[in-house]
Amino acid sequence: MDKRPAELTPITISSAQAFDLPGSFLRRYFRNKNDADFSSQIALSQRRYAPMGSTLQLVTSLYQAYNDHRSDEVAKLYATACRHRDIAAGAEHDSPAQIAAGITWLFEALPDVHWACDTILVDGNRAAITYELTGHLHGRFGSYQPTGQSLRLAGVLIVEVSNDAITSSTDYWDGGALHRQLSAAAN
Image 1 (spheres, one colour):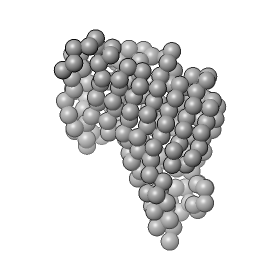
Image 2 (cartoon, rainbow, N blue to C red; image 1 turned 30 degrees about the horizontal axis):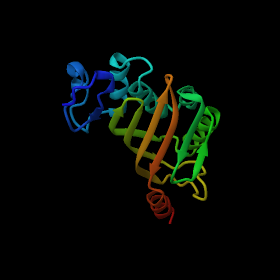
Image 3 (cartoon, rainbow, N blue to C red; image 1 turned 90 degrees about the horizontal axis):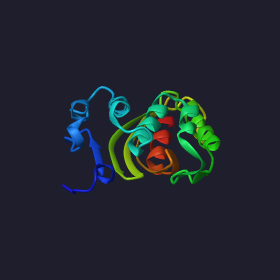
Image 4 (tube, rainbow, N blue to C red; image 1 turned 120 degrees about the horizontal axis):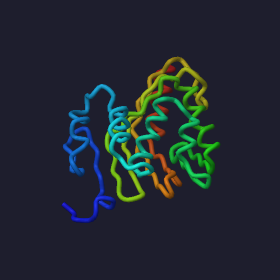
């Protein structure tokens, strides 16, 4: 184990492994990947133990706001001068208001959308989060007509934090998988 100070030690949070965090404070929350609501458990444990404004706190608060469908709370987590890039969609937003508008559109198209975090890797002011997004299409989504199609996408979000706010996020997910699922279900 690296002997750097705790605030610089990379943190790995995974449902499939034990944790090497000071005091092992998360160990009791993550027993296996089949826990009832892994994302909520991350947020619960983080609120109790992660330092306010820490990268881990901001990331878990972001996913809690996503799962609560609170675009206003998502916007509050971003710095005034920020950038969000959605690689598969080719979209870029450079303000909290634009980010909130984009996520509101997703909540309307997929009213039951849910993110399950598989792994969160934190190194100082940066984090990488692997997630699975699930939901059903009940609203217009680009060229796809809503017929209740099921959607299950794996993705990775890279986040950078400064002064207790998210300054940059880049979302990588498989646009081909989205097309195959929404097109196949519609035919």
